[in-house]
Image (cartoon, rainbow, N blue to C red; front, side, top):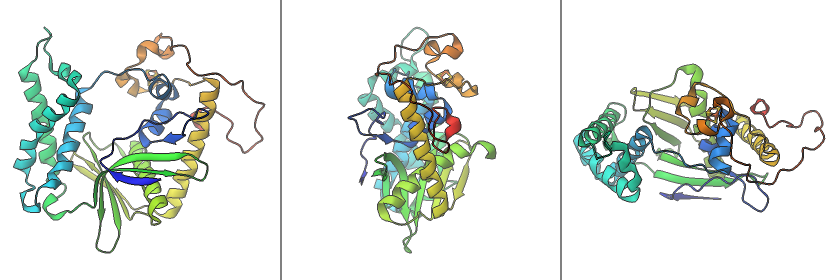
Length: 306
Ligand code: SF4
């Protein structure tokens, strides 16, 4: 188990024999959203097209992280805006394929599309200053890679955007979202991610984080939640049940598609039975299903088990 800053997130390990078993909030959310999507991403490792929105999120996160390299008084909105093109250049240098996001219909680079996209990122960065004041913040950690092994052997890992520690020792976990705050009935997924991080930090440091804070740059909202031990124990139970569901699905190869309105953003419709597609041949050995588990065990690969 450990904590490091700025380390890239390692790929989640599917629960195969001989491999580390690990789970991040993103992959947990994939399985909860659609088990087949989890399979395509984690087991088949099907490629996905870069998206302008996700890439903008990466650039915005980089600006909000690196702005704290400057002395407090210089963490201004104009400085943050000015950092956006440089962070884009840095990103596209590392991933040249991203340049195709800004090609015109003729395949040539479209400076207008790029400059419109950069302006959108700058607007998000600027909007952050109405939600938080970076001249008054000194994060304890930024882009913090965390991982811890539960007693079951399952490793939980993820990257936390920012950790603040008050003079009292209270810990605040902060996550930036470039989208809009969800309606209350849909806030569960984001809160699950934050409680997941809180569980990992609790296991690593022995104290429950005082506050979880979601900063929605797209709508200018800040959502907070103050967890207690009971919340985090509940998340641990949920994660373990989820992992058991993933393990059973991995053994049987039975990853059910779950069609929702989010399918519109899925890159894998061509392989999805819900859209007339056929999944690739399952690449892992299939283990025949065992006789039904005794009542009370998690005996289903469906998400109803979680
Ligand atoms: S299209 Fe929808 S149902 Fe099919 S894999 Fe993607 S998210 Fe799942």
